[in-house]
Length: 202
Ligand code: MN3
Image (tube, rainbow, N blue to C red; front, side):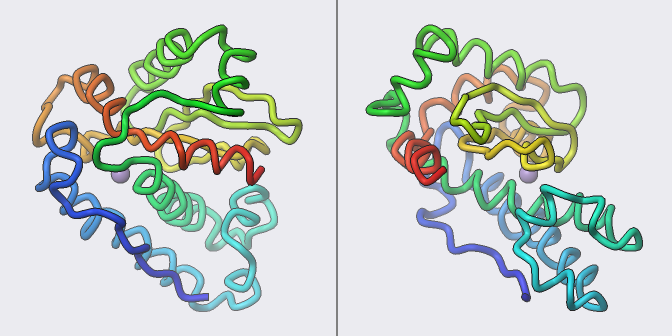
């Protein structure tokens, strides 16, 4: 398996003003591309590992050959995390969760506002680089999770439904140190339909 950048469903400037075009372009063409390239490089001499689906490798890193374990964790994680990130955003997104997903959010968090507060706290509380997530376990129970660097909820046996990149490269050009402004603005571009699909597909 040779990995490649996924096609973006929108242009670099489509998420303005929440995410500026320059940040999108660098994030996608440089940062994400580097994860893809480094992942391919790591897997090149390990064809048996390369055959396995990436989520499977990230769910059970102990089974990845030690020589490339860290590279798969960082660059493989970077690839799946960013691939999800682009998909859970869309221009003119930012409506509210609906349908089954709304019901589950209310069941697990009380209401959408309380969920957003908890998610925002995870995004703000991640020291240094990492992600905030809405994730589901095997039984469909939702939780807010935060991971460091490019670690993924898959490593804890949870499926990521919605993810927010809080590495400085995701927001620094526009927001500098104001991570909270970035997090608050990001809700306006969340593609809730896709998040619900991620949940229903289990
Ligand atoms: Mn990133």
